[in-house]
Length: 140
Image 1: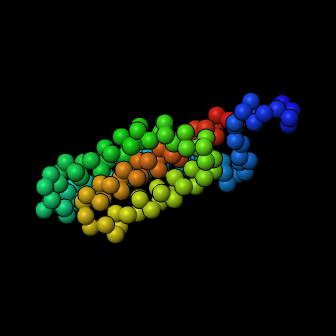
Image 2 (image 1 turned 45 degrees about the vertical axis):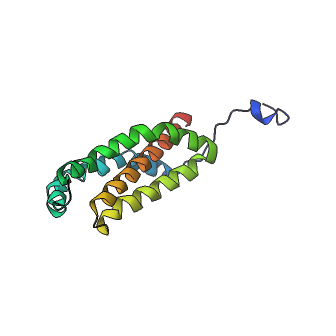
């Protein structure tokens, strides 16, 4: 392709030079979903006991795990579109930051509804990171 061709005819593939740190980040990004869901399993009874004063605390506590997977399914198609529009690197870094903040939110949140909402953001973050990770693996 020559530089004189219109921008609309060029392939819109963004490439990122992956050094060893980038490759390591991609390797570990694949386990974010497992950490997000499996890490909650052992402590669900303690969460349910702590928030037992809430109506439907048992159902809401189980939603902490289920919502992550649901948000991955819902958010992945949008994550691909956002990566094409704003760039893979931005979405990858943003997804990692969102995962970190929303994942650690349980340390300071003492409201079951807000905790459930934080799991929605964890799922969306995993969707963003997963979509970018898959796109990077396919293009490299």
